[in-house]
Picture 1 (tube, rainbow, N blue to C red):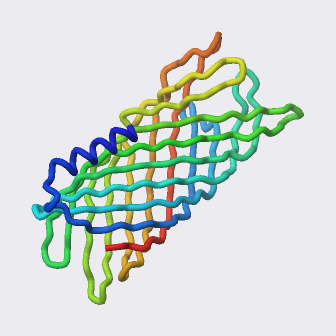
Picture 2 (tube, rainbow, N blue to C red):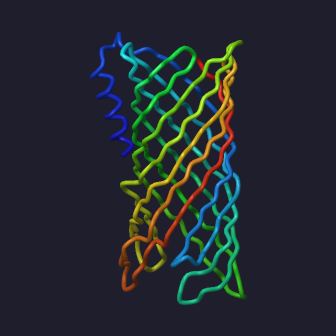
Amino acid sequence: MYKFLLVLLAVLAHALPASALTFEELTPYLSGQYFTWDESINGRRLLKESGPLVSAGVVAGFTTASSWTIKGRAEVFGGRIGYDGETQAPVSAKVQTDVNYFGTRQELDLGYRISSGNLGIEPFAGLGYRWWLRDLQDTSTAGMRVSGYTELWQTGYCRLGARARYLAPRRVAFFAEGGAKYPFYTGNSVDFAGSGVMTLQPVGRWSGFAETGVAWRHLKLTLSYEAFRYSRSPLAAAGNLLFFQPDSSSDLVGLSLGWAFR
């Protein structure tokens, strides 16, 4: 999926004359985020993970004389958050531990800008790819040792939405965007001791994203929200055992500070 985004960017760049593309923005940023992950079966919560993540990334934007826009984002994120759940069958016992997260995301949008005075509105469509490791730490509960394990997640998704920007006096700009996204592919690869590596494929569901903020000169402050929703995966075999990924969801609220080069 990551390679596909690079190919798509190259196609867009070659499809438009070089003179038609105008550099609009390059904004590196740092972000603090609060992340929540839930898993459940038939409405009963199995686990909840929550805590802070940090990220660093860059946003780049281009526009054309005919009002088409290209906007891309690349980001790396990570952190350690708390886990409150239970051990897996056949013995289900309450357990608390830590989970290490590390991952990346890339997004590429194509939009069309409609401007009127100081206001610009831009419907867009795009693709995204998120890759992350979910590393559960070893712990103990009820007098027994509980071994952690690492999951490798990948999801490719489409984005549909609109963004708006209002230019106020004294080089102040207010901006906002929102929309929905749909994961068309998700894989969770797990290596359970004694069972081998297997890849579970939960079914993607529509979820939302939103962003708002203010820019003054080169400084850019952004408040964002994004979610992912997945339904239970089909059964997958590993050795003589059958596994599945339960209904899963994530919510992420972030506050970022960036410096825009124009």
